[in-house]
Length: 535
Image 1 (spheres, helix red, strand yellow):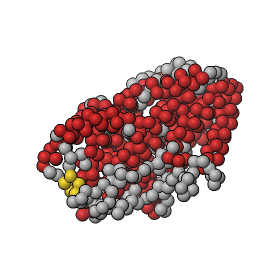
Image 2 (image 1 turned 120 degrees about the vertical axis):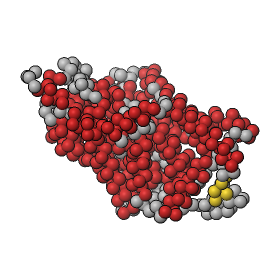
Image 3 (image 1 turned 90 degrees about the horizontal axis):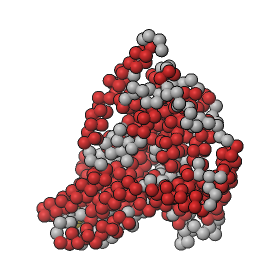
Image 4 (image 1 turned 30 degrees about the vertical axis):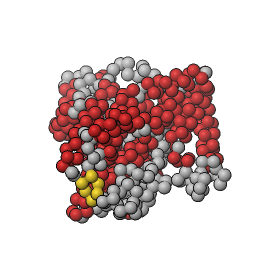
């Protein structure tokens, strides 16, 4: 290395680090003060019990906005705080603990979906599909391909984090471009565009289940489908891909400057990620494509014809039907079919034992999630039992009505608030499990449908994933980045990703407002924009 060049390269990122990281370092410090998410939910559940005792003792109550005689409305038209610290409350906790866990809506759908995703991942299909998509793109479109592939990989997000982000760096390095720019583009797609996708992924039924639990605090019969935000998220895929590509090309890569290749780990390209697809892998992808066509044809036969077995038997409705109510089953069938077809063609899956092992491996990776769900389920159940969620919602809605903050513009504040909360509570499901019981009922009471509220939440949650150390894969990405720049720190990585957050948050929020309230397009099939309190 020539004299002076290493110093210049080492000090170049410092202005960005000094400019962008003071606030974010404070957020990181505050976030590190929070306990483990499992402990956090346990403390929240315990705190709800204590609050219920206090509010029950004080006789806290609010007027129920629903008319007398409606389902779930008390005879006196009041919503009263219910104590869990008296005899009845303690007995209810002990007898309901297991049912709270097993009946928690997101748990079952995630477990079922992951059984299928595990087969596709273990067979090697997802790895090959991502490599085929990115490496087959023309050099001038490689940035677009990387961002787009990152968004699509969210169907099984771990694949994007583990495969695509390091692959993005390796591709840029091989092309003589700054590898950190390639990693940034992939990271922006995988994590910044986490909620956008052309397909329904595992996060969709997960969030829908949490939203449904929260909506039922107001309307006990309300259901939220896994496809609740599909239209909006489908269109958002292209918006996020365009914004992410432009930010990468015109902001991030120019600021990084030319890359000093002597800083790279000599073995960076020896891990096989840049290897082109083999003939066997291409054969596997062809058979997976045939299986894909077969599954899509089967789906169409069960829904489109008048005799479709999964249409609504009562009114022949396609949207409010078993097809969409049980969509997680299609996710399971989809990934098992294409994963097994690929595995049989490539030899990675030869017997039923291989499929079973793949499913077991997928579920074994969810150990921490299952533990977290146990405590999250208790918190959500306690919140509903005590009526604290409904009381908070009515109080907040009343405040918004009195201040006049009930128009669609309130969603800009809501999205921004979700983005800020995500800096300290990085899990999409964990954050929504905490905030949905408050915001969904509150915004329902001023006239907005749970599906619309969920779509807005997903924007705020996605856009700050890429700048928070609380995101579970942040450390892994930092480790990969140091292979290209040994002295790279957290601040440099955050500063590199901050432009994506700013542009995603601004344009995606405007896009949501135009889509929902100006053009009046539903966010998903059968998803209303507005909600009217049942009479």
